[in-house]
Image 1: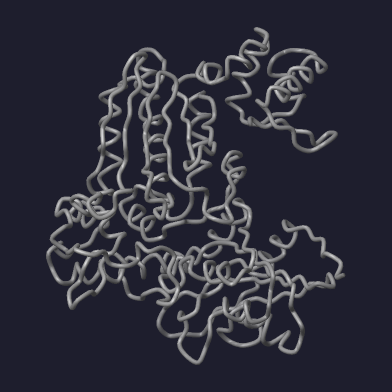
Image 2: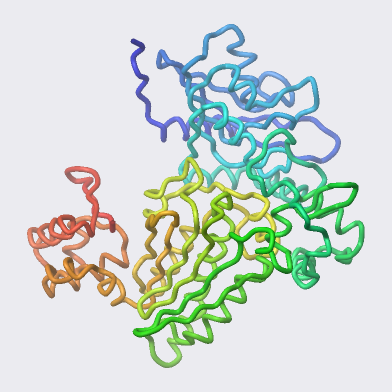
Length: 495
């Protein structure tokens, strides 16, 4: 039996970034920026080999150099590859060249670690999808390392986003991320909302009128319209984003709002064009809870808008990253006295895990790049990512408990707490009854931090180290905290 290769993923990610920095720009006359790409190959025998873009020949991709130029005759079955940029997908290169994702599959690589998605419209997560469909395990680089890759590839990424915005190139035809890329039966351009299209046109800085052929062709190149029966017709994405009544064709679309009172509840459906839903939902919330954070005077006014920004980000993330193949559920917004809960159908897109989301360390990966692209063009979402770190930062700045993620089949639930005491109110009666007064105070502090050590907790609470450790162990026994590490590296994270 072959011995399992042990390795330190973080070290190999960092090595790939160092190799990436050696990339050689391709000599070309069209002004198109070349990405910096580094690749590291861990072979089953434990040996490591590297390559960077343009290392041996002008313009050669790092993966091609590593697999074909340096290891053409080697048996690479079972190897692990680290690449700082998503490998190019099939159909993304001019024949007879084949995509790097195909070469990886042909080499029988068993696992691939990807730095960042390639936002170029000829790739955009379809390289990752091709690898996954071939049975290859795909992981993403750590979020902080993704930041480094993006910063060092800023010129290339800016141009890639611009090409996507201009619809200059189309993605791989043979790879489909979702059925929403296809047209819908009995739906035509007349089913789209002029108001929603105009909002997109104005926000994205598009000059052409929404009813012009140029504008419609642009939408087609962006994957929002598609040729069907001789005419341009909305794709599922186009109908979701701009349809007058998207639910007529896609009943899982929209957002269901619910305000819960002690003895009743009020429901509000947001069923129109998805690009208009976030602001409509926020206005509804402002009318229902004009003072969401329990402050006073001017301070209350200052804190309200950042809190609403957290809600807005949660709603957009729910709409953009949900699994639209789950047709029996829709996004929900639930308001209670203590918190606002945003529910999004579907588990995190592979390989992102719920544990990474809970700890705000999830790397950036978009489930529905077309939706994400439109919201980003309208400046309602980041170019890439789940916005987890910004949610974490805003909560800390406002002195609120950190947002919490949990799985409630078939939803990912995001809880945004409206005040500090909400963290205690959210506890079960069993847990609350077993906490002392001092422990309840300590729990409120931990809820704002998310993670702590026994020393940090002792200093914050002004208690002896042994008492602090007893508190933390008690929280862990009640399943309020999760212990990680050992010895001096022991940390306690809100569970």
